[in-house]
Amino acid sequence: MWRFLLFSFLFAYGSVWSQDLTVPQEILDELKTVVLSTEEDTFMFRVALPDNYDKSKSYKCFIGLSGGDQTVEKVNYCYAAWFRSGYFHKYITILPVVHKDTINFKDYSKARIEDLLKAINEQYILDPQWLIAGTSDGGIAAFNFVAASPERFEGIITSPGILSDSIAPNSDWNHLKVILAYGELDDKKWIKGAKTTAKRLKKSVASVTLVKLTGQGHILPIKFNADKMYDPYFIGSK
Image (cartoon, rainbow, N blue to C red; front, top):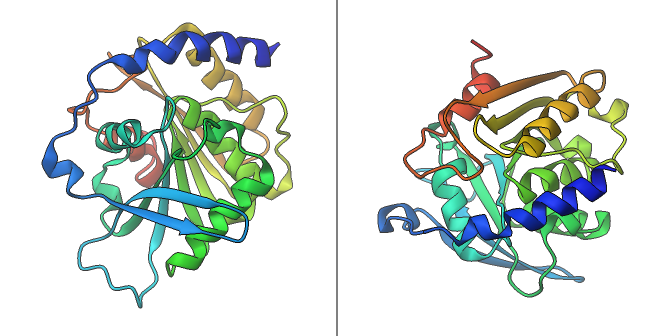
């Protein structure tokens, strides 16, 4: 049933991303394009490095999975609206881009996800556990990424996101801290999906918190303070 609902409202939301996705140049200047190849594949990323980045040092890693068709334009916008937070100034922020086919990250196989994560891990010196976030299709994909390699991640933040019926969280998820944010004005199916996901995860993860973004819909404006999604993760629920 959930697969049918997901198809229905994901198809309906394709037109939402036709809005103006212009990002100020000063924000775009924070990102660079990185292309990494493995024996199996080639991946493109938009990357924001910490201030005074030193490639010989280890850094925390934040992966942000964008919504829509995850093109460079969508990824740039999602960075500006969702993933550009003061909490990540000391992180390497990595934003995957769909660049050579039409396969959305939510449809990546376990093997392809593992290959993508391996490419990142071989490019940078990173702390053992990473933080992952996603919005819309990227919010669905974030759970798939964790399912492929749960030991790789310390936490998941989606805004919004839904745990697929095909994923059965187990004891390997017990350490994860999960934040499920959703727009107060978003479609009811996304809101219900976030709440249903919270119920499914409650007994399988270290903690799960629902965060309602007052006055917001499915697409956040760039002027939105993204820290509202991340405050519960870093300083706890108020």
